[in-house]
Amino acid sequence: MKDKQKELLQKFAEAQLGGGINRIEKQHKKKKLTARERVEYLMDEGSFEEIGLLVTHRSTDFGMDKQIYFGDGVVTGYGTINSRLVYIFAQDFTVFGGALSETHAEKICKIMDLAVKVGAPLIGLNDSGGARIQEGVKSLGGYADIFYRNVQSSGVVPQISAIMGPCAGGAVYSPAMTDFTIMVEETSYMFVTGPNVVKTVTNEEVSSEELGGASTHSTKSGVTHLKAANDIECMNEIKKLLSYIPQNNKLTTPLIPYTLEDEIRDELEGIIPLDTHKPYDMKKVILGICDSDSFFEIHKDFAENIVVGFSRLAGRSIGIIANQPMCLAGVLDVNSSKKAARFTRFCDSFNIPLLVLVDVPGFLPGTDQEWNGIIINGAKLLYALSEATVPRVTVITRKAYGGAYDVMNSKHIGADMNFAWPSAEIAVMGAKGASEIIFKKEIAEAVDPKSKWKEKEAEYANKFADPYRAAGRGFIDEVIFPKDSRRKLIKAFSMLENKQIDGPKRKHGNIPL
View (tube, one colour):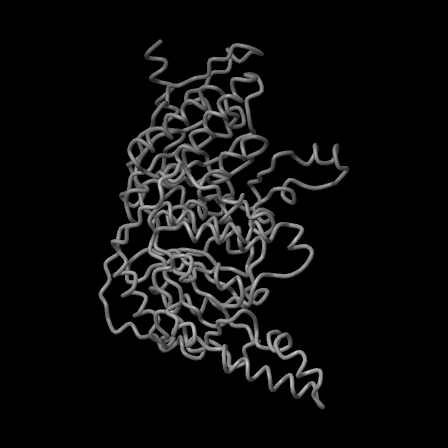
């Protein structure tokens, strides 16, 4: 019996692992790899150590005792990515459609427990048809065991989920509770109820791709943070993401060696248009400030009026939150507030300093926004930034109006350093609207109301449409030329490197969810 088992294991290993990374690279255009090919490609060559290869399911009902597979549909273990320890599980769709059983769940839970004990990132490669219906409540219990560990691991070790096939029903809640979700285009989907159920209940005709594909979740729902064209690209995105984040909540991201020069960036001059109503691309500001080719955008296609992502500043990993004037003039709305709040909390959990670039005319008005909770969702971003204890630096490039000025990492909510460009306008509202309210009577009584309005608009703008009044009150630490931004920010983050804050003693706050 032992010899037979040994022979089966040898054949199994040869079939799944033969050829190495070079063989996998050749399949770049292939939409789906096997679970073991994915693990092999993702990990440093020869570093993966499997745990639980000999585990089999315990079910005997419905003829299951005649269908025994080593590993029970999931590959689990540990290894290194770019020489850093990670724990991983990869569901194998070729075994019972990757369906989760009691033992399948136990293997995943064991890896999750080890990740927390040791303090290393957890990566889940999801490709499963859901709960194994032959096992009934035992498989459902297995999901709950995983969910519980997702919560216990949250903010302790980074958790990354790659959706590389189906992920439906209750299974979607595990990736939803992890820090980052990546989906593969055309071959993966996520939804709580599938197209058939949707049709039965609501009479809507919808495909799996339309209902829960990568494009849907990256643009409409915001469920997925990144999307990839195929399995290879998906795993490359995981590797890139890991390079910006630390092993656990007690460490910081390793510094990349960097030699300081003069750090003046002349390309930042002239980005802001003279006409304050004209848009410009905030990503040009980000690229001008940060290390070359280091910006890694998160949630790129969702709530495009705000930009979030990781970058490096003199080799130091930082998180960036920036209003985007190219979309909706950079206003804050329901989705952008949620997007930025979630990113803020991740960075704060894992000691990643935050840079906030501000050009915000306010919150988006309208019944749609009010009825969908702009108040409570805007409060999420305000709450997240207010509670963040990592180094926080702000640069106001142009508009900072109304309550949005307060929310976008102002001095008043605990920002450490606040800079402004000479083009910054810090006021309750824009000059046009403010002058209409303040000088309403004078404008109405004027011989030429339109000319009077323009005169009063200019008067208000001269008084408030610059950063010097705020700087005079200490709300802005320094007004700087755009070309000096990188140099000032490098110094500021270096100065704040050992920042420590001991907040009030409490179980936890009550963020407005």
